[in-house]
Amino acid sequence: MNVPVFWRSHGQNVVKISTTEAEYVACSEVVKEILFILHLLRHLQVKVKLPIRVHVDNIGAIYWAENQQ
Image 1: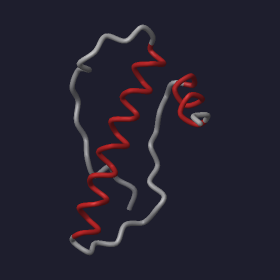
Image 2: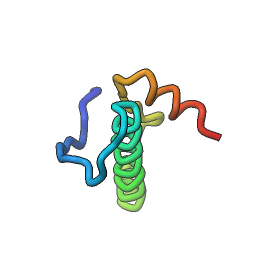
Image 3: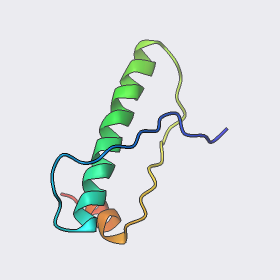
């Protein structure tokens, strides 16, 4: 079953110069939440099917995330 397990909406605490930067920051926040939930589930000995997909609709943010070194 492919359903979201977590959903939240809120404003960002910092003003961003571009939509790419805003989307990238939002994506990094999602990844932090995923890592927290994974850690919690592993502690509870719940198996999780990996990989976990994060959907981003901004091409610049996707490129930026995929090409970090």
